[in-house]
Image (cartoon, rainbow, N blue to C red; front, side, top):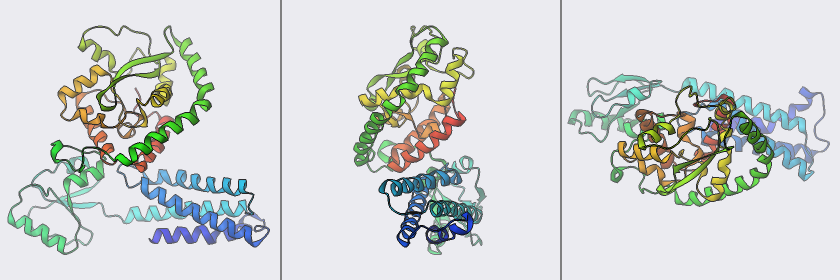
Length: 411
């Protein structure tokens, strides 16, 4: 609440100093000044709301989303004022933007420094969270006594059978207002991964993800594809020409992959490798489907396309067909999917949503091939399914832009 009040007051009143810092004047009339103040206020509050919604998810570097959030809302406000031909001051709006961003950075910095990062844990039951969340200062409780620490919180596996002494201590801590977290929920919050022991005992409530959002998401997928396809057609044709010149073979690579509800489909990509034989037994097909580190089959053009993820853009066609979404678990080649299903419990459950061009596992983990890494990837996929929402999709979309620039996780 304090940060909301601070940002609101800053965005509304600080623009009034615009003439002092720009050697200009206020809007030509009072209505222009008020229009600009209101636009600045709405933009800043909306940006703060967006920023908070996407940064509640684990693994997000909060500071990295301040500029995108505020730039988006203030940009929309400027465009709305311009096209509506309402009186406003560009200098005032710019000052409001700079001041709001600055205050949000400061509040985030001091809030981060003040946030306690020390947690006490009960050493019985499942304590895997201690190894997973290494940025927390973990303190082992060797006796069932509430520690004398004003900033403390306690973590315990609440599903295990603790002794009466430990149960009494946890109850006393909760009554005293000390946060007591269950290891499973806190582990999800800190790592962005969900582990499922038994489908009948998971915490989804229903095995189906948010049904209301699924229809909205499909509509967004279609609209985004219809809008982007005409814009991307010329760049796609240029990329196709480079692929054709890079090595003999077709421009597009087609591969049979496991899709929505376990129905196989042909995924489309720009070809990034030299053409190679894809026949043989199941083991040979599985090995062929795995991209190795420094894979010598990748062409020079292919390296750039993979690093920037441009090779995935032909999958717009898969989206229009209803086989894929912009965001969701990445579809695996059918031989790989069959292998994973035989080795990993509940692997089939990831097919409950449409596969995507990018996903939660991709922005957190990158490309994987080994069975152990795929198991971790599965936990990320389960997290996405559990928290299936527009806000998580927005976060993934924003982080994907950074990944396209840095090439994180590409092979």
